Length: 165
Image (cartoon, rainbow, N blue to C red; front, side, top):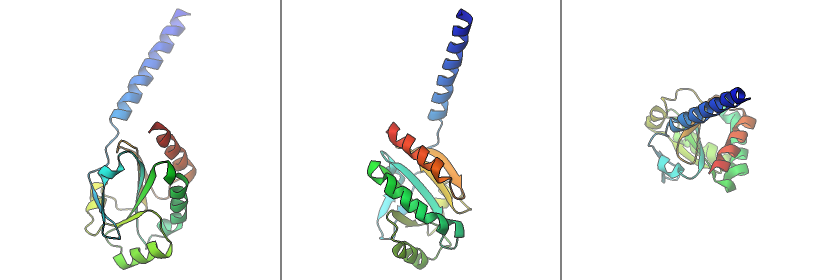
């Protein structure tokens, strides 16, 4: 019996240390300034206190366009609980196309244009769209999705992060 207790204690201690290590080493979202369609600015520092999804996309990306209704639905589902979304149009996306898309689809979240490509570079040199980052309330990147996320998994993770805040 003492041997089982000792083994269980060691396993529990290792799990605690590993969990603390992983949490501590979760990368912070890069310091970034987002220029929104209305000309206003948002900063990655504004993410603190909110669970945030940063979605790099383009109007020419069929997967991006296809996933956008689910992005809108996800935003509506969790917005009141402290969730936000920032959709960042890629540098090569014509601003007029982005504005038209956002207006005709009535996107309810912040939409930014990465005119210089600096946001894509800062967020891990994003080349493929869609690429999304889920950021916790402490401003740490918790998950990166390349391609359309599994929305059931994303919702589960959002709910978990919202409970932690």
